[in-house]
Image (tube, rainbow, N blue to C red):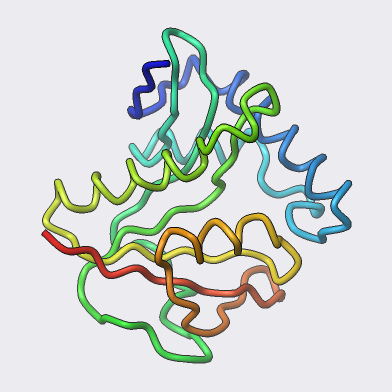
Length: 169
């Protein structure tokens, strides 16, 4: 299949939200506390898209994945318990989710690779991310893609595992 990673449009909030709802349900079924507090929600997706940070993975016209991709925009990362690998410009990914109809095909890894390519295209050589302590699938993906565990960051009062990957040209 051919996949394309591109900025999302406001007209795509409904299918993006449907994918995020599936991911929220998967986290719940896995016994994870992540995303069980009303976040993310459609308003978060709308804000991502309005500021140019909402990205979709598509095959043809079908949206199969979503992530927010921001440059140097995560205040919580300034208060980490631990140490980042770099202190230069960085890209951060949030709300990574793949449609349940496309699970098990390595598409989260493909989306992360596209995010890394986005960073490089902006001459940025660091990608940072975080996930809940009980989101084992995401931790395995980060580790398999060469991300290094750097410490803990806090969102809405809860600790998250923070990861960074230093990219090469």
